[in-house]
Length: 370
Image (tube, rainbow, N blue to C red):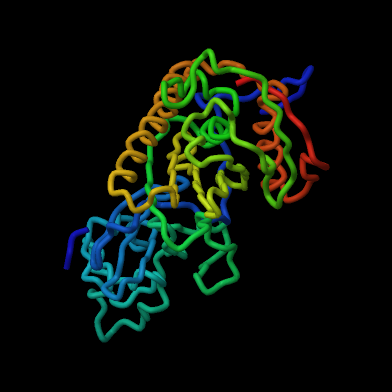
């Protein structure tokens, strides 16, 4: 056994700060819990997702599982106990659980005088699926009862790919802010020349006016297909590409860049998520894939190096912003650069309340400088 607030005024929206009331979290969705590609058979790892401590592991047959890291008997973390590849055993009294279903298989203290059936007791378990090297966990609404992978659940998110051969890379960073601040930073179109100022990306001198068209999609919105920004040098590697960016509740940003060159399709795709860890902290994960020079050995480490620099710049900005938010300042959103953030808040409230119109009644054209 292995031990194991929002109002409107002249185009502005006033927001509560992350240092004040925590952001509401959206349940009934899939979230990336952790990287699973390195989780060996018989191995476990602990993480926190939407404030829930979780034990994630892989059984001897390769099946992933995710359990609330808590024994229903006396509340000790199950991770303090043992996992033999088949069952998780609690350290306190030895209760043993099948981790995919959460069903209790054994209570060692029972005798022939007891009529309690252990299999009628369940620890909390969650549907889990592996995509793109991540363990995606479905976190149900409170009171939903036991939810199984076989139930009618939304599709598991997955990175789009446009050919059979490609390279991929992933990045992650913890952010000391609530998920709302993380997400509106994710979709912010005007911070690039400042936060991401670098010789290989943007500079203060590269700022110019931009016009982009947006449209409604289910549970989100799309920056319609367009040529990438001319001040983003890496895009030029693709030739004359077309970019589409989707934001989908609760936390997903999909970007696809596709170009035809010499009769061949060249593409880059990324899926970025900002996942609530607790009500006041979150984590950014990026998974990217591309078929540009996928056969060149150094392409992946080079791409990962520059991607890590990019994510570190965002992370450092969030750390610095968190210092300012400690005093609970009043914040604002402006038109047009902050319009996607306004749409996000409207979509989120519609989801939480279960009614309301989509904030985009038709195609919209926005203008900003970046």
